[in-house]
Length: 65
Image (cartoon, one colour):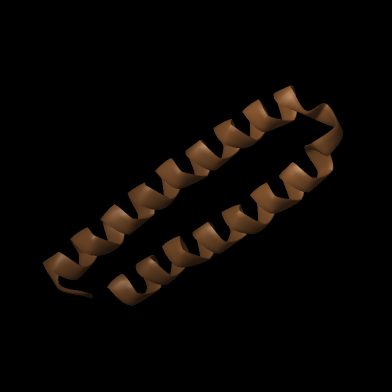
């Protein structure tokens, strides 16, 4: 079990990751609505960035313990 500051820090990182994923998804949907022909490239970039962001959140949970 980690100390209180490390657990709070890990929680803040996870909350930030959730907000970031929401921002990425919303921005990608707006971009696809503006340029439907670029949907494949936008979706690929969104998935890669989302996966990296989820990795950071998972690492924060792992190292926060």
